Length: 158
Image (tube, rainbow, N blue to C red):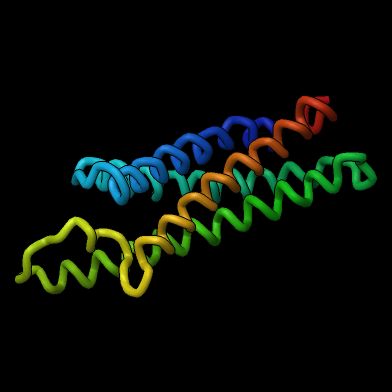
């Protein structure tokens, strides 16, 4: 199977999982403070991030088959860079969430507060909000770049 076909099959999972997980967490932070939304949000971010890593690896492998002087090379570089930025952004969010979860789990003697489910601290709610909104924007931007390369230039299909 060609690597470009693997990338095309894998790439839709991080788009759906990361956007839906981010929206669920944003909803639980700012509108509906429900446990179910937090569970859905965090439950979608980890598989979304793992599928993002699979999409990055398959994209880098399939990039090797593309011509080096292709007219879409600048789009490809932006697409790769935005994918790597997404991995760092969501990886940081998941790591901070895991650190916070382990801290709360260690101090189980006190009552659980829904606002403490996300990494907090000075401005923590707004830092997480900005991080989630930036992540959604980067997913859309990277997906648009990938669509431009495929539908305008036929990258990986011609």
